[in-house]
Amino acid sequence: MNPDTNESLARFVERYTSGQIPWDDALPPPEVQELVANLSPARALDLGCGYGRTSIYLARHGWRVDGVDFVPQAIEGAQKRADAASVADAAQFFVGSVADLDFLPGLYDLAIDVGCMHSLSEQLLIAYRDGLLRLLRPGALYLLFAHLRDEATDEEPYRWISKTFLRDLFADFTLEKSELGVTVVNDSSWRSGWFWYRR
Ligand SMILES: C[S@@+](CC[C@H](N)C(=O)[O-])C[C@H]1O[C@@H](n2cnc3c(N)ncnc32)[C@H](O)[C@@H]1O
Image 1: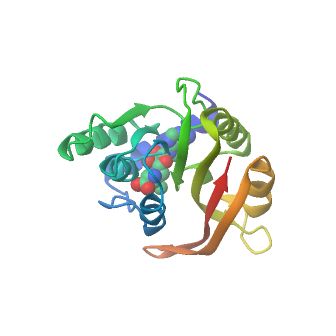
Image 2: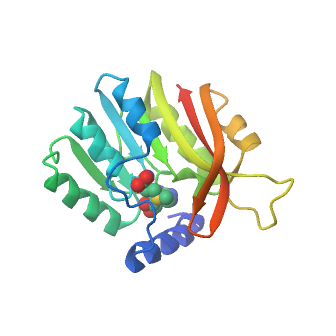
């Protein structure tokens, strides 16, 4: 694995091991639920699926889903939850990096990333984007939630992803809609955004 991925993996493994997982809700965010309500079921990819709340929600609504996360504990948890929800036939989970998706054949009609790619280095983001371009059917939707960096006011070392970088990264996609806001987790808050892209 790329050294950037190894470092990030160690941080996420520590979070799962110590139970610091504020994203561990039963349901995916309202933006995901609303999207699912307005689409016919097809094939979906859940990038950085964690315990699988988005994958399981999609599977319950008739989708066939592949979920990928690089933390084995997360994938084990997602599989158990899919079994408990009786959707194990529709939702498959894989341990792997979202920056190295060569093991997936595709093609998908929908990809969802809730809070994963903003942890990747710029080099890994390019590999992630190239993977998406290969795996998504032309016309497919890609819904992204990411924490955003603001170089004008944030202190170094910068975290997260800048809007400029995001714009250049997804130049081959059409941005149909975006909603910018602030995400608060415990005592911290970050700029963040939801982005609806079409391949
Ligand atoms: C904030 S959590 C969100 C989990 C899930 N999307 C949800 O909404 O419940 C981010 C997830 O991305 C995973 N992740 C981060 N970097 C990754 C990478 N390079 N490859 C695969 N998974 C990654 C983490 O292990 C973690 O489970």
